[in-house]
Amino acid sequence: MKDMSQIANAVETGTNKISARDVNVFYGDSQAIKGVDVEISNNTVTAFIGPSGCGKSTFLRCLNRMNDTIDICRVTGTIRLDGEDIYDKRVDPVQLRAKVGMVFQKPNPFPKSIYDNVAYGPRIHGLARSKSDLDEVVERALRRGAIWNEVKDRLYAPGTGLSGGQQQRLCIARAVATEPEVLLMDEPCSALDPIATAQVEELIDELRENFAVVIVTHSMQQAARVSQNTAFFHLGELVEYGETGQIFTNPQDPRTESYITGRIG
Amino acid sequence: MQEQHIASAFDRDLETIQARIMKMGGLVEAAIMDSARSLETRDEELAEQVRANDKAIDALEEMINEEAARVIAMRAPTASDLRLILSVTKISGNLERIGDHAKNLAKRNSVLSQMPPVGDSPSALRRMAREVERMLKDALDAYIQRDVELAAVVIQRDHDVDQMYNTLFRELLTFMMEDARNITPCMHLHFIAKNIERMGDHVTSIAEQVIYLVSGERPEDNRPKADVTSVSL
Image (cartoon, rainbow over all chains, first blue to last red; front, side, top):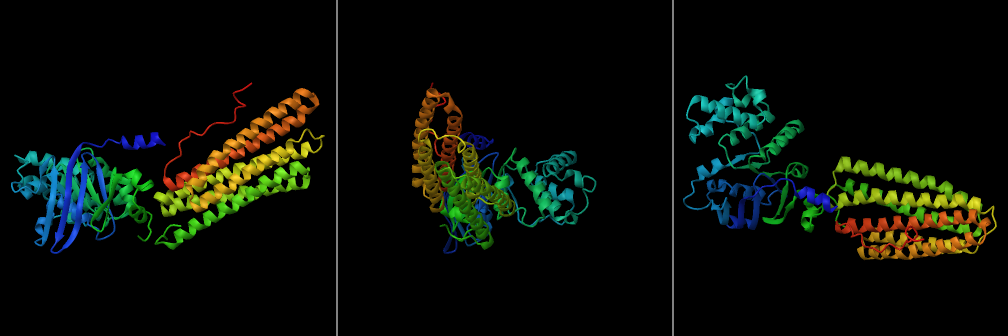
C-alpha cells in the first residue's frame, strides 16, 4: 500500500510554476473567490473540479488575466509565474497571454484557413522571421496538437470546416504555437464526443512534457484520467488540493467526499 | 449512515450488496456453530447439513462479486464508495473461506464419529469455534456500524484463538505419543483445530477491511503472532 502511493507520487511532476497567495476575486460586491492559495507544478496536469459557480473558471481566468476584460471584476492577492507577479503594472497582459495560453469550452477557430489560425499568434508576436520559419512553426504546432496528419493536405481550407474534435485540437495547436509555458483549458472536451475526448485527453498527457497544464472540468472521471493533481473548489473556496489518486480514493474533507461520490452536500 | 447519493439507484445497488454480505455473514456464523456442535454431539445429520449449506454461501459470494463488478463498471465509484466496493469483495472472499473451513470440519466429523473419542478436545474445539463465531459477529457489527474501535478489538482477540490452538496442538501431540492408535483421530482433530484457527485469521482480515473502509488506511500489521507451532519443536 505504501509502495503504491510512493509510485503514484513519483509520477514526474515538475518544479513549481505558478504560485497563488490569498487570491480574492470580486464581481462588483459579490466575492467569487475567497483567499485561494495554490501551487501549480510544471510538467503537470492540474485539474480544477467543483460544482457550477464554485469559482474554478474564475480562478483559471485569473492565471492569464482574462478577468481584466471584465470591468466590474477586481482581483486581490498575488499570483506569481516563475516568481514574477503577473499583476505587476509593468506586465503586459498580451505578452502574458502568449506565455499562458488558453483553450475554451467550445472550439472557436478564426474564420480563416487552418494555416492562418495557427500562424496568427506567431505572426503578431513576431516569432517567425520568414515564410519557411513560419511554415515550421505551424507544422510543429499542428503536430503537437495531434492533428497534423489529418490536415496536412488541406492547410488552406477553412478551420471552421473541420469536425468538432478536430476544431478543438486545432485550437490547442493555435494555443501552443506561441510557445507558451502554461496552458489553461476551460472544459476543453465538454462539446466533444467520447472519441474526440479521448484524443484530446491523450494530447493533454503529451503536452505535459512541455507545459504546465491547468484544466477545468465538470467530468470527475476526466479529472481522474488526465491529471496528477486535483483541486476541489466549493463556494469560492479551495477546499482540498492534492495528488489526484488520493483525492479520488481517500479525500480528507467531507465536502470533497460528498461531491466526488455524487452526494448532496 | 452517510448522506444519500443524488442517483438513488446507486444507493439501492450498494444497499443490496451490503444486505447480501449480512446474509452471507449470518449463514457463515451458523455454519461455524453447527459444525462445532456436530463435532461435540457426533451429530452426522447436522454435519451433513453444514456441508449442504455451504453451497448457498458460495452462491452468495458469486452474486456479490458480480454485483460489485457491475457497480464498478456502471457507477465508477470513488472515495468511500470505492472503498466499500473493494471491501465487500474481500469480505465476501473471507466469508466464503470461513464457510469452506466449516465444511471441512463437518467432513472430518463423519470420519471421527466412527472412532472412539480421545480426551475432551471436541469441547475445547467448540469453545474455540464459539470464540471465532463471536469475533465474526462483532466484525460484521463493526462493519455495519463503521466502528473502527470494535474492529481493532476483534483483531486483538485473534490472539486468544491462536493461544487456544497452541494448547490444543500440544495436547493432541501428547495423546499421540501416549498411544499410536490415537494418531488417526488426533490428526483429524488437529486439522479441525487448524481450520478454526484459520477462520480466526479470516475474521481478522474482515476487521481490517472495516478499518480500511472507514479510514482509508490499512492497519499496520504489528499484531503479535501467537500461533507458535510452526516455529517451535
